[in-house]
Image 1 (cartoon, rainbow, N blue to C red):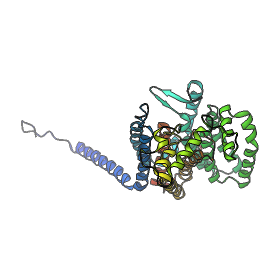
Image 2: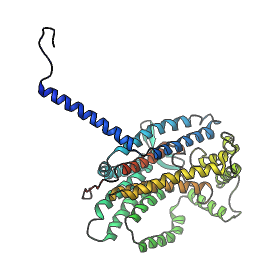
Image 3: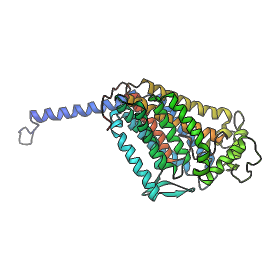
Image 4: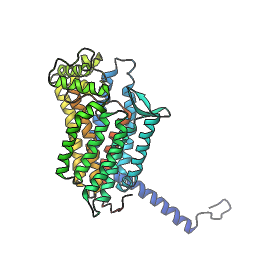
Length: 407
């Protein structure tokens, strides 16, 4: 009602439109809250707990070093942001993931090429791309991009009549293109991670046992030529040190040589005993004896300060996360969801297994962080994105995804 007594409300059509808009907004908000309520919060809380343990270990490993005292704060901020990213990714329909698969793969290839052309060199390798104030490692993105591309590829190709062998050849090309670009950086660890996670998807897609055995034989035959003619001198040195220590040879260098890092790691692990020395009480960690203890060798800090029981608890946590992820892949109704969840789980699993084996001296030392625990932004983004994809498969595991065609 206006001041002069005339009515100036909405017309019947305007009122109907505004009411519908309000109802749609309420329905959308209700749908989002409903999806959030259906998320597997036990899984999510375990992810949070593992990340917070990693942040606590970062504080312990770096608080005595003025140059590294800020690392735990940086990691906390990163995790808080990436946690939000994981939740958003979890709510995305699988059809969105499938439609973005080739775009993510092509974008990653472009970033890897740009890294080779104009990348930033650090530690003897050209692995980083400077984007404004931020340095990113595109090879980390390649792991998830390859998994998505393979899942999309097999989703389309498994129902097509023709040679299954040729289908697997195409999948091999999808894996090898980014793997080759990463290998020449050089980054052997990430190359192996891409091949391993991609290989899991190919295996689940029905690769013949004879082909698998033939591939293993070919790989074994290629070990010596690769060692002799492909690996960089520092990579050959790491392999030599690993073999010498594995067989107890006196040729393994000591003191400040190639084997110093793994020797100090073993000392830290052994010093922890069963229960550990307590948080902030580790001698090796507090006096910074283990190189890279805040990144690839952070498990030594856990083992020294919380002992065998603490390190085992971390591995049990990863086992629960990965077991739940593989069960999610098994429950998915679509080939895309099944392969995507399994590939993402394989990516995380490879990092855990290789990192632990490397730290205790069962594998050569390569750059391989422990997911959620080690310091690093790009690696954490990759792990959280993998978990986001797995959660999305869980939320939409009943979707059929009848989309046909390769693209």
